[in-house]
Length: 188
Image 1 (cartoon, rainbow, N blue to C red):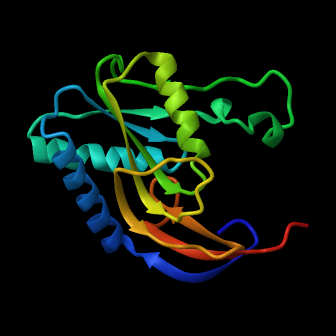
Image 2 (cartoon, rainbow, N blue to C red; image 1 turned 135 degrees about the vertical axis):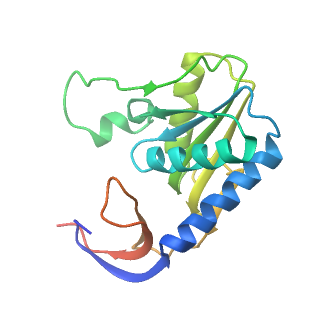
């Protein structure tokens, strides 16, 4: 881990992550029995490789390709201008394989916390068109919502204490596939 944190415990190892992704894909098949009109969108940063994994699992289950894309909705966050201190930001919205119009869009994120990133992602999707539905898959739900956002599929739900965070490590971004509960150091 690059920042000042102490590992409390490993929540998921690679095998457990794969089982969680399999279960999430199965939940999606139950929600959306056909591959048609389905787009799986990974939310930057670690939601993108997770979405690719889920898309591959869905392709195997449906027996036909499932479209996947990438979404960076940071410009849409309600706290964007407070978090980023620079002028004239570049808006990086997404890489989408098809129009979202009339499709079911599955947003995939690594950790669901306050709900603000998901709200921003939904706004970015709506700027592209009017989907038939938006579903939410999160590998980890750590509670503590600030907005009324609920996932349709989760890999693991854990309640975190103040000062604790969940860190997802996934290749190709990291050198392992695992999820950790960490204690975060004091801000300096």
